Length: 141
Image (spheres, rainbow, N blue to C red):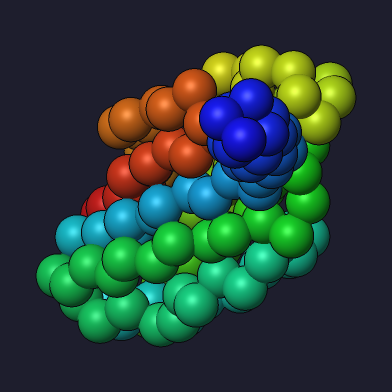
């Protein structure tokens, strides 16, 4: 009886470990608008999962957690555009791994901007081995 119970417990623990290893990752995004203008949101290349992001007023911030539906990648294209002069910041967030049970690679944030007159920063603020990570994005004058 004890051996049977031990077998059930071990099988349950192994199943839990396997599902945890294959779990999807999430990126927590904080976007800061430090410009004197309101900004609009768009996602030119889409997101893996729902971003929940939207327009941000002047001097305000927005926080969102983006859960990927995939077990080997997460990513999102995020663009904020100033409403007064159409200058924008574009960030592409990405994190991948080569297999369901493999380790997650270090995430990347690629930043581009429309022109001079706008400053765009993207800083990775935390990284977890379970695939979850956080990033802070800022559009500035």
